[in-house]
Length: 172
Image 1 (spheres, rainbow, N blue to C red):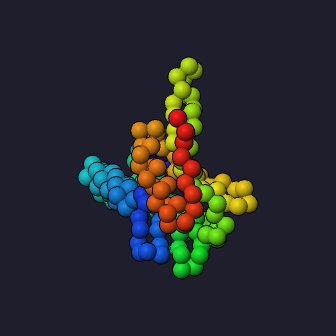
Image 2: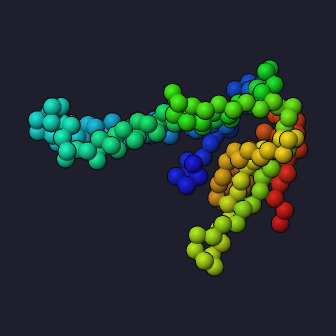
Image 3: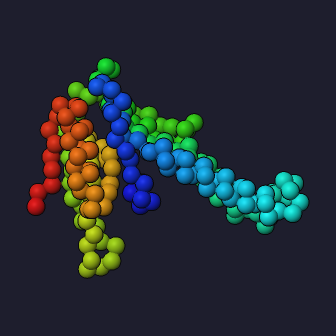
C-alpha cells in the first residue's frame, strides 16, 4: 500500500487489543470518489439512468466499481492478549484471507532500512516494519518512505511493548 501513499494506522482498542489497519478516511475517500463520478454521470447523461450503462460510460463506471471495491479492501493485523493470537486479514471484505499466529511464537519486531533504486545511480531508502517468529518466518507489516522513520519506529516500539518482545532498530 506504500506505493499509493496509504499507510496503515496503529490503534489501541484496549489494554488487551492492538490493531494495525487501513484508516477509515481511506474507505470514506474511495466511497466519495465513487459517488462523485456516479452523480457526475447521472447529471451529464441526458437520458437519465437508462442511458447510464452505455459504451461511452464504460470507463467512468469501471472507476466507480474500482473505487467501491477499494473501499471494501481489508488489510489488518490484530494482536489480542486475551486469546494470545495475532490475526492477519487481507483481501476484499467477503473474500478475505486470514492467518493466525500465536503471540508466544513472536520473537522480535524489526525496523529496517532497505535501499531500492528506481533510477540507476540514485538509491532510494525505504523503511520496513517487520515481525519475526521463532520458526524463522518474517511478516512485513508496513513499508514506508525514509521520511516516516520516526513514525514507523514509534509503531514498532508500541507493538514490541504490547507483545513484550524486543525491537531491533536500523543501525547508522
